Image 1: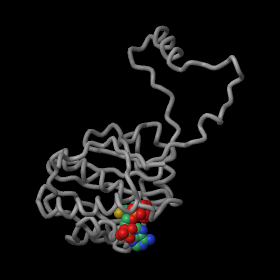
Image 2: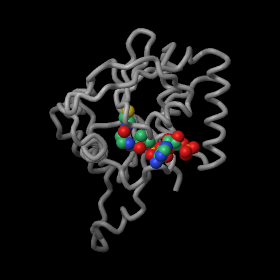
Image 3: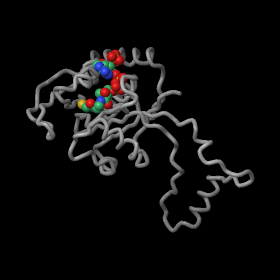
Image 4: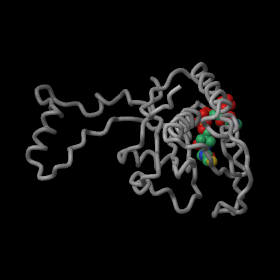
Length: 220
Ligand SMILES: CC(C)(COP(=O)(O)OP(=O)(O)OC[C@H]1O[C@@H](n2cnc3c(N)ncnc32)[C@H](O)[C@@H]1OP(=O)(O)O)[C@@H](O)C(=O)NCCC(=O)NCCS
């Protein structure tokens, strides 16, 4: 089943919150996802797979099948609200999420995490590929982030994508006063970054296969 990527919706918050709590158990205050989804500067994406067991979940007796399109149309007729009636949420398993704020010409990765049962399977890479593509389409010049000095796994991921260590923020993390390394890409529109990024992306596609993404990608 191909990995898919799209922007996060409100219905994704319960699964994303679980991943977030597992990935950042001591983070305080925890990410306020409902507020982040309203934040015009913030972009949150998820990597997911469709659940293939959906039709068997709630068997409907023969002759009682319903037509969701018809029900929605009837609901709209009787609804006083002009707001569109949302279709039932797609049944998906979220494997990871990532967030980024774009301020002026800087894209700042606020968080990235893969489901604890799906680490080192390429989810982090797919998320970062899509964040960098999105940052490019939003005309950001650089992508920056902080990581715990002890978080070598995350730093490896960022080095792989051409991030460099710029400095240290002392006692940045409130839980244990751990330092953060500040990491940044070079100008993401530069030929050297584009070449590096394209190689990492091609290597990913060869190793792990295609992913399907709704996130706008930069033109070649
Ligand atoms: C950091 C994190 C997002 C990486 O996601 P992931 O889905 O496991 O990463 P991927 O499978 O896409 O791996 C991409 C690269 O990350 C690095 N990496 C991933 N797992 C690693 C491990 N166990 N040891 C060393 N490097 C590792 C490698 O460079 C890897 O490339 P490779 O496959 O060529 O070795 C994930 O470990 C996670 O959710 N950690 C907890 C939350 C967190 O620390 N987030 C980062 C905050 S700054």
